[in-house]
Length: 130
Image 1 (cartoon, rainbow, N blue to C red):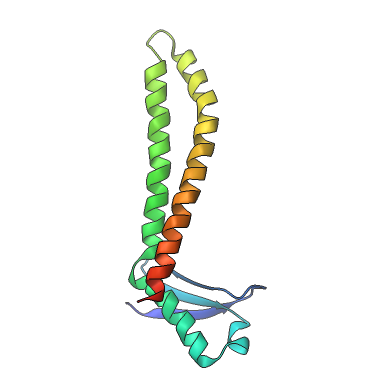
Image 2: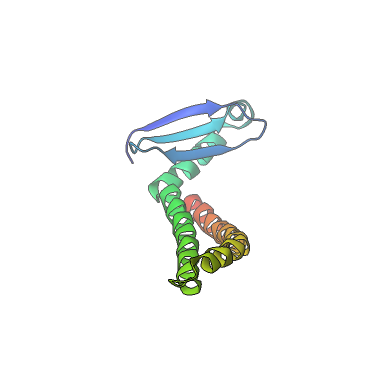
């Protein structure tokens, strides 16, 4: 891993986050009260878990999957438009896509959420055993 910044953030929950920015700078943040509550060993385990996410590039992986699922839905809408519009009746195609897009977008959001939950559990397990 590259150089890593550590910091605290204000939160009512005990949580930690790892992320990388556009310039590939790695950061690990802990809720500000965690050092007051957890032992050094427990904090080490939490930080190592977050470093596991960075090592396995879980953030980039999850973003890629989310973007792919969104792109798939947009592609489906374009294909529906092309299928139901003709040179003579583009308005019918637009109306159909408009009404078809609402359920498709909601279904895609649900499917993306389910996929993200599955991937999230996999990433958490993998970060624990790094």
